[in-house]
Amino acid sequence: MDPAVIGVFIPIIAITFGMGLGALGMWTKHKQKLAKFDVERAQAQAAASAGAAGQNGGRITELEDRVRVLERIVTDRGYDLATQIEALRDERPLPTTLEARAEPERLS
Image 1 (tube, rainbow, N blue to C red):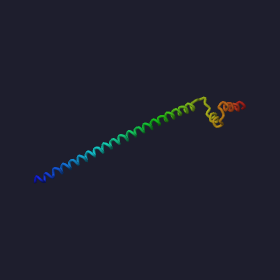
Image 2: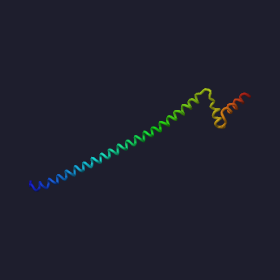
Image 3: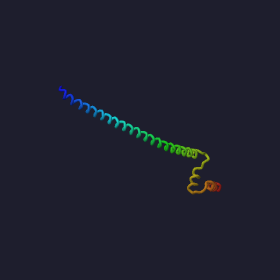
Image 4: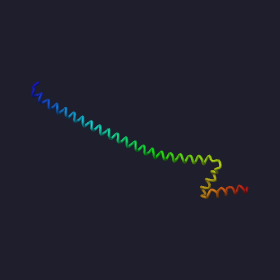
């Protein structure tokens, strides 16, 4: 090969190689940015789900407390459920309803 041709090819090869390395560097930076965004998105989702779990945990505890109260009411043997419901419907105090209910029984 002619030394003049080799002299022309050497700069062309160097420029091409340099552009290839530049493109590789740009691609690497782009992949790093994408990875960073993925990590940030995953952290945001984890924080959001943790917040939702905390809210649901409080709601679950509240509902469990209400169920305990209802179970205690239903299983209490001295509890007159019908009288309590009527007291709520009539909006009368409970002792008045109990006295009114006991009075007709005494007359019989």
